[in-house]
Length: 127
Image (cartoon, rainbow, N blue to C red; front, side, top):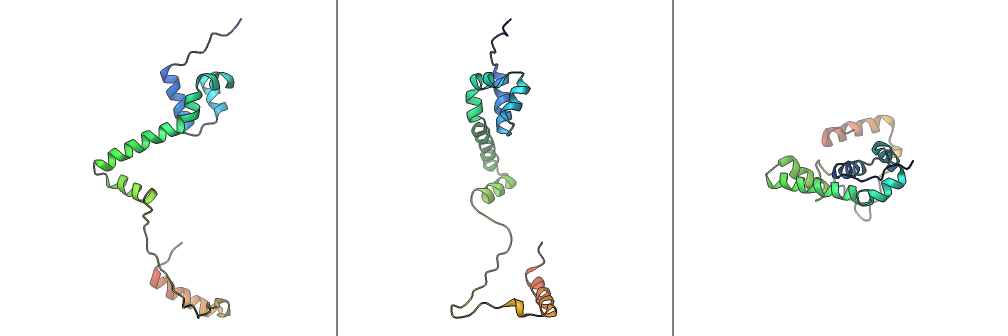
């Protein structure tokens, strides 16, 4: 006896879209939906191909709404991830063209320890 034809509902399409967006493997999605891989590919082709993009579009739309409403965390997130803003202090050291790089390997253990202490007080300890 043949199984009844699979007719996807809007809710099932949404579930597949969300699972794809979350990175769930297709075999797991098929198993969760109680269908085979061929049925999944045949009936949910659009969701499988564009689930991640659709989810990203929804998230970006929500993020923009939050920014427009004055959300400081959303604005900071956007600036850091999309506009290249960074936190922290950048220290640039210039070396004159005719100057040779300093060879720190010639320092004694004590001299290295002293230098480390001096640098940490200037720049702050970072791990």
